[in-house]
Image (cartoon, rainbow, N blue to C red; front, side, top):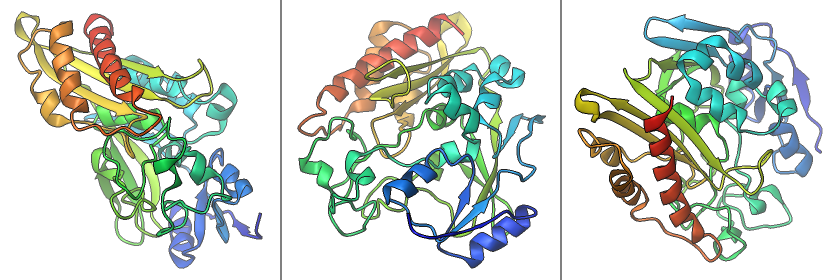
Length: 329
């Protein structure tokens, strides 16, 4: 591990000023991902700005939903009465991630910003990784790519976003609140993450020095039910091969009035196909309908040597999640 400085800012404005002034700095929350990456030699920040003691850990009602402070621990969010009662999808997604010990440490903003678990990204002995060293290549393309992307990838990078919370937040149409040198701004979570394209090392829409301060989540659709399903190699402390966050709202004659479906484990960001969701409006909630939806969502998927199974796994998990969301809350 290379030498670095450590500072604890006195307030949010101080943190932003420090981050803006020092381009090689990183904000430190729970450290459950960043510290690992530093130990592995993947990340080399020259300055750590500890934001854990900033007053950004409140969970409160808003006019149209809920606001969750960036420093709120994952365990607190998953167990909070407002979340459990009004956003069970988010609670279920959080509880399916990591372990209780890590959830006790991990912060809301840190969870959003966790980086891929691609084997080649995590191991600097592999020199070809455009995410770690732009322009160096992608070892996963012809390597062991079982956990890698089937949607939205490019020849520059086929890594996947690893988290659970962001998948649920994507289905919930959450907004990311950030503060930087300019006034506070709001980023819809659907545009917060980027696909790899030619620049896989640029993973989100944050500007230099910007600090996530909160999440805002609007009310779920009226008469809606939700389900989060995560398929993984073992039942705990494992990342998703495929995950699905599904919300289904019903209208007259028990027909679907609105549907939202977000996938994890299949792309560089939580994956949604709005056209497939819109095609469900007015349809009956049954297996045939949901198979059509699943086909539409994975249309255009591209698999690699070891991950071809993910295409059918994604289809089946989508159908399973939609059926479950249609039957239970």
